[in-house]
Image (tube, rainbow over all chains, first blue to last red; front, side, top):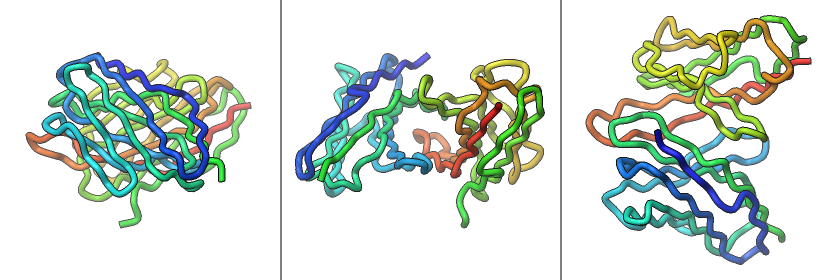
Length: 112
Length: 117
């Protein structure tokens, strides 16, 4: 089955800095890569996703890049704000499967 | 739509007791997922249903865990008997059918925080 590794487990930045979270996956048949944000005590919510037919996708201050050859994808947050503080999960789904494999999560702390 | 609804939001019980968690998916969604979240193990998929039929229950940790989906608008996750190591946050999520395309977004419920003493 698919295996997703996520790094770092904790990331601490100053407000205004950029934050990058990286994930690798094992199965080259994966073709859908969502990112979820979970604020403290809340439910995970999708913030951005990318499909294997594109290399990059951007939505305001967040962007995701995908390198299919290397089997890794990353989340980039620019101009971080305290409200960006949360746990971020990457995931990968194999083509034809509805089961996403989640990474272990990254706790992002943005210091004002 | 109110989103995915779960009940109860918090459950405290004693070891050995039966626990039943409930979920109402978003209307029209064909897929329903049960997850368990702990600090040690992260977010684990326990089981998922498609059109009320269990498709993959390989994540269910033991026979003490069982899940049902009697109709399109209701699912339960039961633990009997419960043990302290079952303490976790249990999320239900639903997702619409995407045909031949890649999977669609999962919509999570607010979760049930279970504490087994």
